[in-house]
Length: 208
Image 1 (cartoon, rainbow, N blue to C red):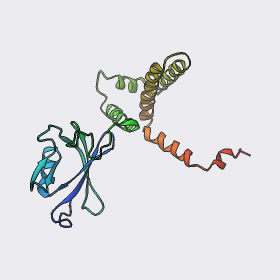
Image 2 (cartoon, helix red, strand yellow; image 1 turned 180 degrees about the vertical axis):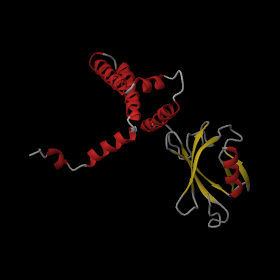
Image 3 (spheres, rainbow, N blue to C red; image 1 turned 90 degrees about the vertical axis):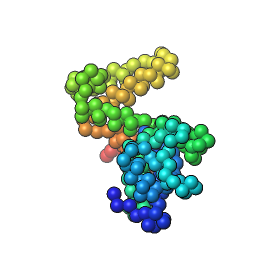
Image 4 (cartoon, rainbow, N blue to C red; image 1 turned 30 degrees about the vertical axis):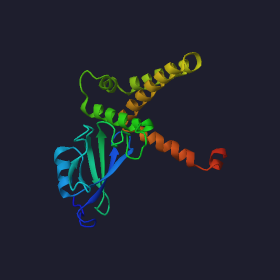
């Protein structure tokens, strides 16, 4: 990575993003030495402009930022670092320096998808997910159907807690089935988005 440190007098801004939730955690600055140490240690390290020295995030609090990936922008003068925080990021105790929560919400689907992809590639013994892949597409599809039925049963005659539990099983088994067919859950989101943006007239138009 050939970064342009000269534009800001030896520094580049580094945007830190949670690798799991995709929420922006903080913004810091790095010089060449801070960047090199970040790459070497796997812990996000900044150049402190106020203290005029290197500063590894978490060196005092223990709330380190463990690096997952590092990207530069098109001008090679800004970094986007995806990391996993060990605790609150802000010195105030907030989850982020922008006082936002750092809950994953629907973004956890991508995290789960990545986990299931890894299982599909490695097929570790003793894994339930591995056993599903090995059972074949018919069994995986059957499991999706079973979980869908159980979700419906809980929705009509059960409790909300059990309904959410069964719905979670349904989504999990659906992602497994999609993965086995070479697809990801994000493709479902894209298909729904396309439908949402589709002009209403196209929905109302009947086939001739």
